[in-house]
Image (cartoon, rainbow, N blue to C red; front, side, top):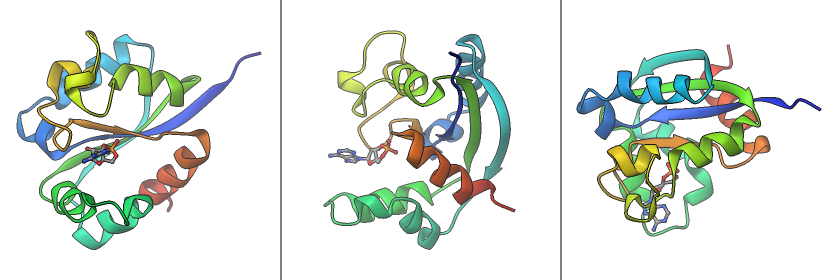
Length: 136
Ligand code: CMP
């Protein structure tokens, strides 16, 4: 049975700053993702804190929120069969050092913080994250 899903993807400030938006979108498209909606925005730190609330007890939370709000980002709804899992595979491991060849983070990521892309980690969180940026 087909399972067309949507997931949220963010091209993070380090990648937008290096003009990688076009190349990263091309990787999504050539891997069968449809970019259903997209917008380029810059968010306030308070919004980043809300978005990453699940990480609020982590030692890296403050830096993470400073970073996500530090420059323009591109937020996208990606659509594909089993999009959540497929996107996680295409992104690669959180730390680019651990990411395998052919993944976005291996190709473009600089560090665990500047890892170029974010993607929802479950279908449930995909709905929450899509609503966060696209509800209106
Ligand atoms: P992301 O998928 O956007 O989700 C949370 C982010 O926290 C993660 O990517 C990393 O960029 C960042 N981060 C920084 N330090 C860590 C860490 N030790 N473990 C996991 N994520 C981290």
